[in-house]
Structure formats: C-alpha cells, structure tokens
Amino acid sequence: MFDPKKLLDDLLGSNVPGTQGTVRDKAGQAVQLAKDNPLATGAIAAVLLGTKTGRGLTGSALKLGGLAAVAGLAYKAYQNYQSGKQPAEAAPVNQPELLPAPADTSFHPSQAPQGEGEFALTLVRAMIAAAKADGHIDEEERRKIGDKLSLAGIGSEAEDFLRSELERPLDLDELVAAARSDAQKIEIYTASRLTIDPDTRTERGYLDMLAGRLQLPDALIDHIESTVSAAKVEIKEANPSSPW
Image 1 (cartoon, rainbow, N blue to C red):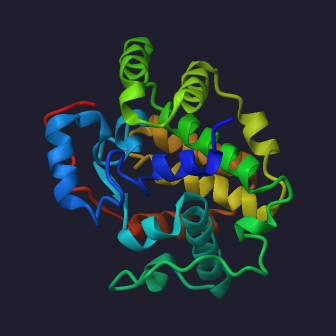
Image 2: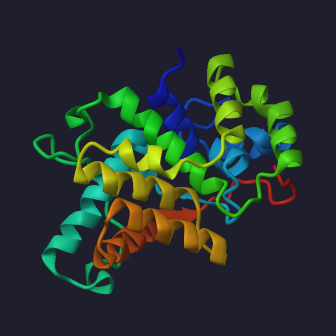
Image 3: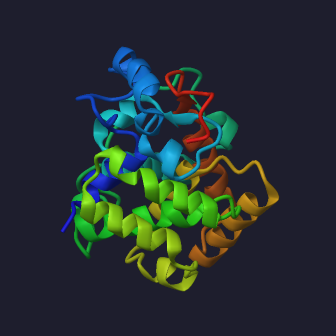
C-alpha cells in the first residue's frame, strides 16, 4: 500500500521529484529538471491536478509537509475568523512562517479520529475532485496523464490510485461524510482551495457548493480564501512552454 501522507506531500509540492528538497530550496535543480522532464517540475500538482496558474505554496508551508501544511493553514484561517476581524485586516503585510496547528487542537494531524493516513487520503481525494471541477481533465488529458504518470516517480500503487480517482465520478456525499470533525471540514475545503485558483464560474461554483455541503460560514470561507492566497507564490521554475 502506498503512503497517503507522502502522496499528499507530492501533490502539494513538498518535494520536487528527482531532487531532495522543495521547489524553493532546489530552484537550480528544478530548472534543469524542467528541461529534462517537464512533468516532474513545479510539483506534481501543477501537472496532474491542472494548477494552470503556476502558483504553489510558500517555502514555510512546504517545510511542514502536506498534511501539516493544510492543517496549519486551516487553523490559521479559523483563528482569524474567530478573532472577528475582516480578512483584509487579518492578512499580514509580509507572509510570516506558517506554523503547525497546536497539538492540543482538533486541527493537528495526530488528532484525526480515523488516523493521519486515512485523512490524508481524504484530502488527496478532495484535491482531485477540485481539479476536475471545471472539466479540464477530459478523456484525452487523462490518457496523457496515464502515459506519463510513471515519470513522476510516485510508485505504481500511487499511480493506480490516482488513475482510478481520475476516472471516478464526483461523489460529494462521500467526501463530506469523510470529515469527522468541524476542523476536518475546514481542512477539506482548504485542500480543495489550494488545488485551484477559481478563475472560472465552474470552479467558483464547485467551491461554493462544497462550502455549502460542509456547512461552513461565508465569513470563514472568506478567511480561508485570504489565508490560502497569501500562502501561494509564483512558481518561477515551472516550464511555461509545456501544458504538462
């Protein structure tokens, strides 16, 4: 069985395949990697999950690892929401280092009732669902992804899982039911928002529908939007000439 936590790390860009560090730490290697293998640069998510904008997490979030990064961002947004401030007031001028969620809160990965690995799998499924929201992963694109997945170095079992998830129809009931706490509802939305920058009506509509099904208040969603936007930066290393 593949490691869901590692797959989540890969999808969020915590590691650049073919290197031993993050996108920011290994910029030089990533540039060369882009020339040799466009699929493996700019994080797998930029290729597999269709992050068209070429934006990824800041270095401080990457250092935490995928599960902790999602939890940290969700917890930060929730804190800002609880403070009663407007998102613009809560947004920092200079993005500080992202801190993990406190261990004694339900946001911390160790507090997941179903276990860290199982919840990491839920977050991966949430990301894939969000990536498919605008329909850009059509049959032809799935074929291209399938042809090149092995180059990403994620392992055959992870490949098989991703292929299967790409083929599955959206099951929002299953995704929502996977949340065992209010914190996990916030994390599912956060992971979904990390995957896409909603620049189409379909993407925005999907996120709005997800927020409604998760019963998240509008004011909290605004803080998640602000927090995620502040945590994402341009990925300069990506190969702009390649659609993959």
